[in-house]
Length: 89
Image (cartoon, rainbow, N blue to C red; front, top):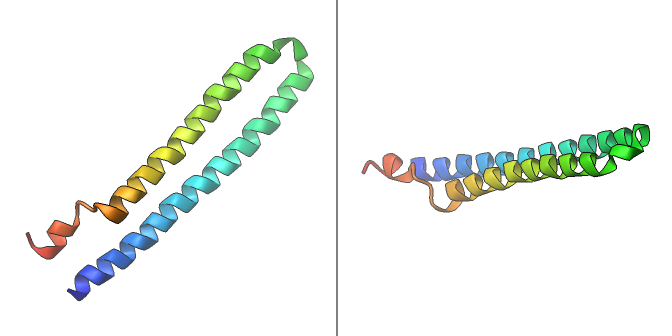
């Protein structure tokens, strides 16, 4: 039973790492994306609409990465498929 407690402790650390790194990566990505967008609009203001569409597509991909990482983390936390292997069944 103590093996199961250690396993759940390690799972909680992995979940925290997964959510934290996903949030950090998304924050950095949005910072870089916003800076490059403003820089490109300042250089070529006539392409604002095209660049805005491209920016929102990339922003959606950044958000999707974080949502998928969070979903996997919650799956591991609440419905861990590896628990049955640890219990021996």
